[in-house]
Image 1 (cartoon, rainbow, N blue to C red):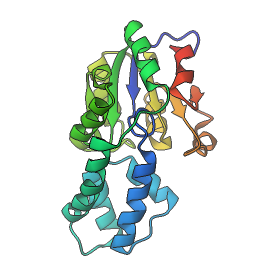
Image 2 (cartoon, one colour; image 1 turned 45 degrees about the horizontal axis):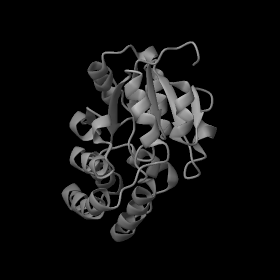
Image 3 (tube, rainbow, N blue to C red; image 1 turned 30 degrees about the horizontal axis):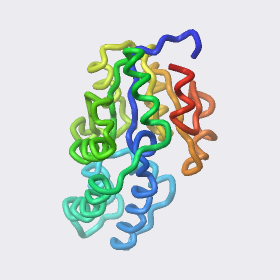
Length: 218
């Protein structure tokens, strides 16, 4: 990475900028228990890379549930809205990293599975919204991060070449998609998802436990 000048950065939000993964991991077991289904770790990883609307339809179809996706969405929304508006906090290093990114004139985009209004609420609550002039969600794109569309939309916004763009993620699926597009990747693992390194160590360019560690690469 030392010889690559990073001109653009695409950040995931949950588990990277906002400390919310424990909340998300708690919602899925709670919802699955209510619905009388069992979601294993592999399926959970798939679902977390999708928007709420897409994942709700996916769960209904996969398990043949006698419930509408809209009813699942309502259950989920009640739980997450209160969190993002009132309780979300930043991951360590976020407040220190973003001013440096601006100073280096690196273009920034947020690419997230979280609905835009809730992403904005969490960023505003923590006084960091101005660091992310553009928020792109899988909901508005219509496809999860297993597909390249959201990263292609982010590249279009940034106007940077893939090889000059760093994707900062904590999801194996997202990292592999970005890598396949020729983008540089940074894996964030911090105890919640240490197993990530076992699955992406062969392709990832940077491995960090905290955003503070990313400063030396900027």
